[in-house]
Length: 314
Image (cartoon, rainbow, N blue to C red; front, side):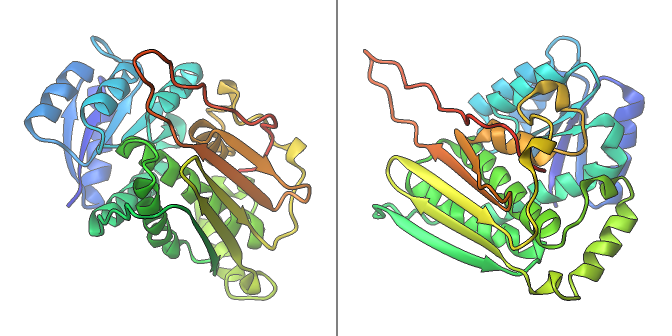
């Protein structure tokens, strides 16, 4: 059973969240701020930390930094309110695994927690280190089945660790970006499901199931190509859908767009990757992460590159 530490200064909201999580089968502990959360982490480490941003004594941003520094294997999930967009974006940059706007909490909490739990379970099921690799290139051709994604990502994680692409938090962030891009290609690309339809989760799930069983949607595949070298990893995900106009999507790197339900996946991708590129048709995304070289005492690490074009779809 996965154990989740909920850090929330509102007793009412903390109780509501605890009830939702325990009803779904998770063990749950509560802390009222970051200071209390760190004390509980030291006593008994949870699997996931779910934290509010605005709290007394120690806010969510500082908690993210402390957890990454002291408990690298524990992902932190943020709960955001209107007005916390800039600080939430900073928290993603500092190591948070994902975020949920509070107005979508009842609809998105359990599915987001389950996605993180699936990735954690996949990580723990196989911990080989392929230290002898010099470079690799893998190509996967996937049916539109989201249940395949955690196993695929776990396979990629092995190579991320073999090539030393950051600490466990860094590997987890890359896993989240790859997961978001792959699910996006299946659902919004091949199945042509509208992001706006997500406001009605029941209708969205029904249409996803229907299109997964009829042509041409069911015949389409998602291609994922992973290129690893000692210097960088490049992940290219493409679908066989109609594509889209990237200029129609709000800038996913703008913190003001953080509270939008549409575009959350791209916000994570742009936060966690050094470069993001899209093809002209709008049905292919290439994500690049440079391996951080260890700096000597006399030099600073090079700054990460960022994508020139922030426009894409969720």
